[in-house]
Amino acid sequence: MPEADATMSTYAHARAETLQCIDEMLTMECIRGCPCEELREKIETNAFNLVVVGQFKRGKTSLINALLGADILPVAVVPLTSIATVMTYGDALRIKVYFNDGNVAEIRPESLPEYVTEKGNPKNIKDVSEVVVTYPSYYLKDGVRLIDTPGVGSIYQHNTDVAYRYLPKSDAVLFLLSVDQPMGKSELDFLHDVREYSNRIFFILNKADHLDERDLKESADFQRNVLKEVIGSEARIFPLSAKLALEGVLRRSPDMVRKSLLPQFSERLNTFLMEEKGTVLIHSIAGNLLRMISQSRLELELELKSLSTPIDELQEKIRTFEARKQEVLLEKRDFDILLDGETKRLSREVLDADMTRFRAELLGREQGHLEEEFDRTKSLPLKELKTGLEQMIVDHVKQAFNIWRAIEDDRLAKAFEAACRRFVIKIDEAVDALLKFSSDLFEIPYEAIKTDALWSAKSMFYYKFKEQPGAIEIIASSLTLALPKFIGDKVVLKKMQEYLVRAIDLQLGRSGNDFQERIDKSKLDFRWEMLQRIEATIEGIGTAVEKGMARRSRSEEEIGKRRRELERSQQALSQMGERLAKIKNYAQNVKTAGGQTY
Ligand SMILES: Nc1nc2c(ncn2[C@@H]2O[C@H](COP(=O)(O)OP(=O)(O)OP(=O)(O)O)[C@@H](O)[C@H]2O)c(=O)[nH]1
Ligand SMILES: [Mg+2]
Figure 1 (cartoon, rainbow, N blue to C red):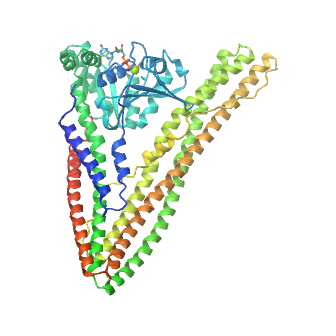
Figure 2 (figure 1 turned 180 degrees about the vertical axis):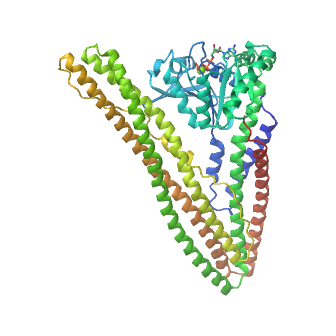
Figure 3 (figure 1 turned 180 degrees about the horizontal axis):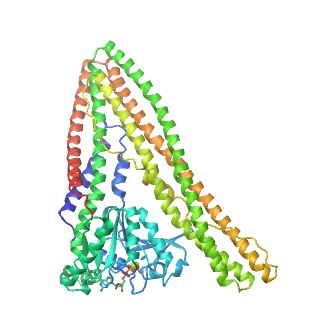
């Protein structure tokens, strides 16, 4: 397998250079309030979720092993994977199991099948939420997370549910098909759903080793035509053999690896990851740093100007600036009111509406299940009948909420981000206007730099979710069983119906509160960060002028010394600006050239 390619080295260079610039800017006295640490962290923790999905037994798990070149995850001929496994970068192979009740256990690699497979952990009786495996693979570098999901469409509905839970978190999807089974209706339906969440899909036609070259081409053409009908355009399909690739790597046989056709796919995947994940962020960070440089240059110019402008004139300009500042402070209040309204609308139109819809759906579905299960088990003694039904309700409600919460989380995060994006633009405009105003007022140059907002509501929102315990507790039902069996049956059913409603409403209330609390907290964080931007700008301009004014009373010699210092800083800023502009240009070019996924 290729260990690196040309794109990677250029990207790696851009990334390293950006980090270097950040480090240098941290030490530059003339740059105030650079959130450099934060930006550095954004680059270092930039995660990209690559979710592997498909019908059961297409070879998803095998493909992950092949990509990593190691036999880590268990594969089998029967529906196997039942829990999602997140592969992420680490110095050594380490495995952690996260349970729904919030517990975490580190396990040995040979115990993995006891947690992630249908055989070892049937119907997820161990209540595992997900498994995280760290491994030192080149593919997982720089924040790529490869996620193995259970296959959909098998007799195990809970496996399908788990796969669906990971779709909203995907940044790109690897969709597995295989040559031994042409695409069926249920697979197409699944693809339809996947496309709701992602338009960045790689189609892989696995098990290519079953066919010779001619038949493989025929199979790929067939699948391509089927796909075309669903997605409306020509899809690129990567035929390969995950099994052969892994064998080739393990036996150190480059010939087998080549025959597996995996390298064609992995090269495309590499390029894509660099373009999508890396450069988009680098572009935006370089843009934001340039913006900071431009603002710092303006402040330097202001101080220089204040060293030489006649005092009367300067004081007159300061008064004009103060008046403008008051107007901006008023605008700040308007932002607050708007933001409040927007988050309230979000709670009402997204959260409340989703909760109502989910409740109706779940209740309808589970009332049906309850009746079916009652008919099936009503001959049992009352106590067993009750316990069995109660357990079923608890299991189903828990499962349904785990999945719903993950999906709702994504919906809210997206809606919140959309609402906030408008504010970021408005705030940036207000800041730009203030800077432009000052540059006109003091007659100094200023270059306004437009860049996309780096602030990400989505990641902030997810972060807050992580803090929430995943456990769902369900109250015990109260029911006396001292009744004759023939009346008791009816009473049990009625009580269980009530219990179902209560269990759902209790969970809904808790989840609703959790979500609402996160909306409120995210709003406060966002508000603080935004207002901070305006304040920092006002302060920066004010301080620069004050500094210049204060020096006016000093000796000519001292003023001259300060002027030379400022000029040196100007030069340093302009060199830094050139370096950042180069990085931004590189990222821009890669961004424009890329973009096509299927
Ligand atoms: N011949 C051949 N068999 C393969 C290939 N890839 C996977 N298999 C076999 O297909 C079966 C299923 O592989 P898995 O990787 O477990 O498939 P999966 O999609 O993860 O299955 P679930 O997790 O149950 O959905 C196993 O017996 C694998 O050995 C391949 O490229 N060629
Ligand atoms: Mg699997």
